[in-house]
View 1: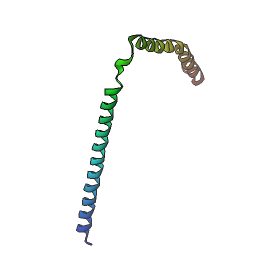
View 2 (view 1 turned 90 degrees about the vertical axis):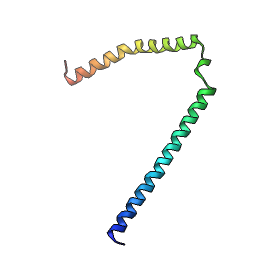
View 3 (view 1 turned 60 degrees about the horizontal axis):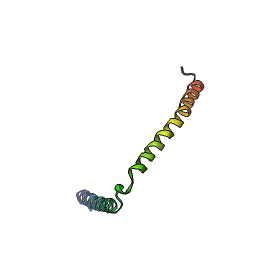
View 4 (view 1 turned 180 degrees about the vertical axis):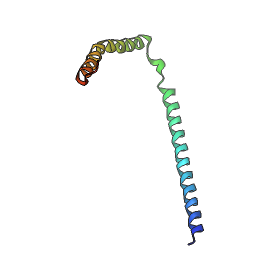
Length: 85
């Protein structure tokens, strides 16, 4: 084979490989989109009651308030160990 034929074969292989990858990714995006629509249709978040939503928000805020002193202590320990102000 000549250099020109080898080069053209390489370009052909590159284009066909990129085409297969592009088709696979488009199929994957379509499958993910279909699953998302299916899940949103049958398992909507409207099934949760407003009381349940408030309790999860309150629990998250409570966890953050409990962790705040631990985070401050960890930062102070790190600064002390590194000799920072």
